[in-house]
Length: 487
Image (tube, rainbow, N blue to C red; front, side, top):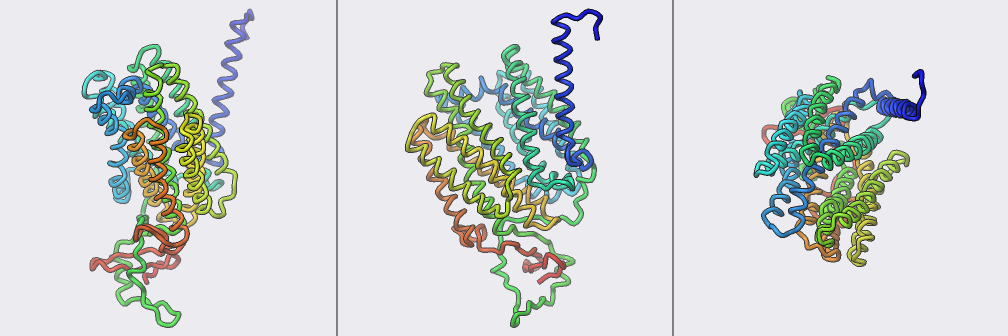
């Protein structure tokens, strides 16, 4: 205690006390349920750094790249913005899954590298903010961010505490990333941008990415142990390679022992997981569409009035944040006994609100659509995670999460592209995206019922698909999950 108390000193003391209590509470929450011992706490901090980097970069680019494209006056800038925003998903989706299957060691290094490269790109942006270098550097930042997201999905099952399941872990990572990363760093980056311009936000991004590289290497080394992992696959062709059945007995093929030793194993995803992927993908189309479309509408409808634009974006942004938090909170508390059915209902609700937004044609309905879509997206993702954890064998869970994340990232591409390319008339934009979502909803329903519009990618498969073994002669055998015998 100081010898002489003043109002200023008391306020400073109280502020330090509250800050210390807040930090202590945060650390307790991050280490709860044995997360500090399993390695989840270290991954949580890295996820927060990734979200914080994205928020800082978004603030830095907001007044240049985005809003110059949002005016629609320069088609070249619109095309460049579309490239930078959408291309990373298209690049990552077909490449990162197979790369993860081959990356048997070095996943921590890969996470740290995604941060280290972004540190260099952020510094490049600081000194080349007004030149053409802005576009490829921003593209690189986005690609590396999405790479981290997919890598994180494959690492998460390796740091699972024994006290909680994977569904709760993913919800926890989302909440920490949103509150501690996106909101906290976004507010700080906004303050720096107001005081020093976009350069201040870029320097903040450089500091955060350097810290993120350090935090990634703090993740325990056991995430590198991938021996025995079996890659997951979206396709299923079990019916094309029936096993020989005599009476009610399934007879092993003569070459089965050799196939088990020399063949390449893969784990097809079951019907519930595929239903979850189709439903989540349909929802992601709308969330990707809303993320870009509302901002473009705000720019075109307000005649460049900053306060009106901020009010419109603030309303939709608040709806998205509330919906995301509510969806994750609900997913962490409700019983997910039939996750595929929950995904189906979420998909139907999102389709209904998209059609309603097209009919009513106003901003309030668009904000309501954002709220519903964000909540449904979070709840459906939690349900998909539950299906992945329950239906896949332990050796395929990491690969399954990586595969699912790439599919969802690519689905966001479709909605994001529609959000940039469609006219800024609510009824036109929501009508087109509703039509696209109709196809996804129909496929989700058919998959849930065991049928499909696309052979090999629908519900014509068992709930728990058996492993497949591909030999050098390209014949496929099915392996019993419990014994490892090839059928």
